[in-house]
Image 1: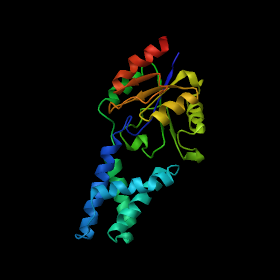
Image 2: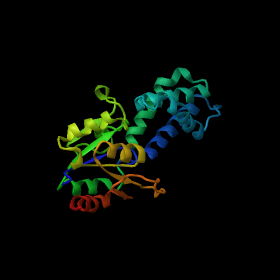
Image 3: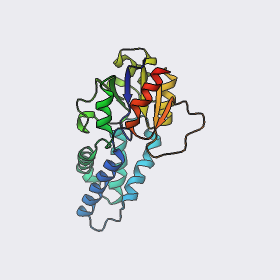
Image 4: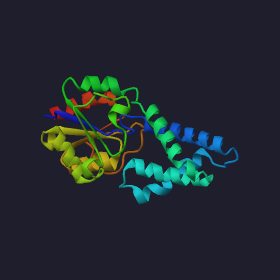
Length: 226
């Protein structure tokens, strides 16, 4: 029987993309206040993340974002303002990061029959993103040296936090590689949350695919019965 449901955070439960855009818009506004002639666009700021991510993908997300912002302020010669601009970004990013509309009602329903957990590679702390008190346990990459998904050690930590056998846990997330393939490899069941309606990757070993968290209660019940 499936007794535990563990959720990825960003773009699964949390609308991170909108929050990041809002944070970058705040950064762009501040840069233009500091230098009205700065020829920097929102697209430039977004591309700076892409430029640094591949070389830093294993690093903490906050470090990757700071490296991206370092490139951004350098575009306008505003390097001396990096600390203040980084603080502004993170302030806005957390203020704007909130659950998708389907999330809180679904969690309330699921909690009646299952233990819920939260496990993320990112820096979306549950208590700072509108999810305080929603989970029995939380697992964060880079705490106590824990590597990011898809590392097996990450899922070992999830299983340890749950305190049950891996096959009693369903892992739910938006990343085929990190939340489905890696979870299944670790012995967990896996549900792919495909909010965007993307084509399903070939041979994706998901036990189920959903487009909203509202569907999850019925899916888990079916998996438990099967």
